[in-house]
Length: 163
Image (cartoon, rainbow, N blue to C red; front, side, top):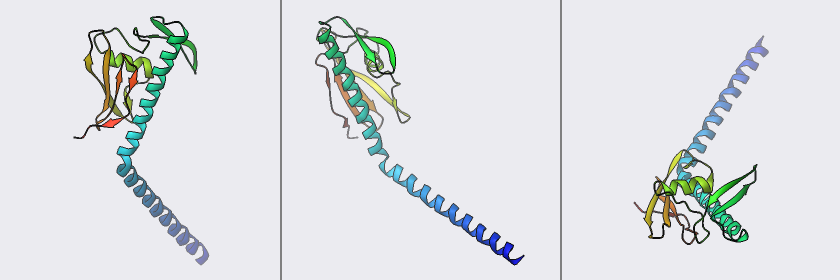
């Protein structure tokens, strides 16, 4: 009988120790996450910018290989269908829509919603030239952003606006 009581007390002590250790690990993880959340967000956004740039370069390369058409058929890895992509006269990813042009450019280039880790990505058209080229800025609420200039195909490195 005494052995059963001792075993029960021992298993209760082990259970309490495990719960305390798990709570401590959770606290360390949560504090680490909040401490490094901005860096994690910046790294994720940089990855999105690189993916965006990769699509822009692939569209331009396909445009050159297809002898400079107005629309480029871009293949996708996980889909047998080809995506038709509008390009401008210089062969860079673009759209001829005047309303929400930057959102359309993002949609075509990324094929994912404009968000990162539950943070919305805003698309702002900074200026439109007389040749209907677009200068788009894709920005997070944290101030991290990158620009896309459709007449040159330039995708800038991710920067942060100092608030």
